[in-house]
Length: 356
Image (cartoon, rainbow, N blue to C red):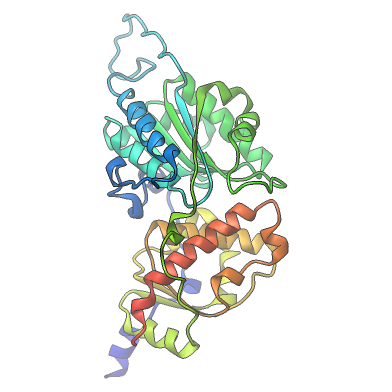
């Protein structure tokens, strides 16, 4: 192999990427991520031991059907002298109250797909993506951009930062006034250690004036990603990971501590763009996360990789040892368990990259 050919075949480095994401891309990408492109209510497989999962499909299907027809505010094609239609009865929002891994995002994406409206009239994104949109467009322009929508789905509503919670609650209040229907899941408040769920009562209290617009829908169950599946493969050697990276077109290869340092220099809104066109992420020397700020950045990256179904091959510590006991018992425990769950699933997906 010539030196030029060898260079062309070399894996890319995430540490060498510094993506810039224009505001219009943030808007255009407010659709279910690639992992959830094809999910529908009929592809959700309820656990027979958890009747609340079957009930959730029925309730959400009915909710989607109720969003058909004219925009609730009467905006769009309504003539200026036409009588404004009465506001629809009942809550215009639904909150999916369940632990990690019970399929909340699958159901939220299925609701988006099932809602009878053009894709441009529906929006789907995480709380972080929504706050990034406000930062890019400004509050008033975000209201104007989303106010004509039929539905806004918010996955992993973040309640850790009171300022962001107030900001998004204010935005949603304006959108509800415009007739936009809402659907959301949320994370755990700092200090809320109880169940693996957030708890609807806490969510409704935190969003205050918006609570009347949400119907809580509880979804019980265990983490489906580990239901009946084998344990995640043990970490590989540095040599195996490096060899697999060079043998896999479109793979990236990075030293884990260096990648953590690089993530601190890239805004989390750009982590999706950071992973553009990757077929796999290969990491050497995975170590325990040194602090909470670093841990939370890794959580966002894990979410973006999981959304895009990018396998992760790694050497060093196994993913269930990334976070300290103090972190796993702290206020962000749900985020960390979700990251472990998702990285473990992606590690399984990467198993075939290593030659047996």
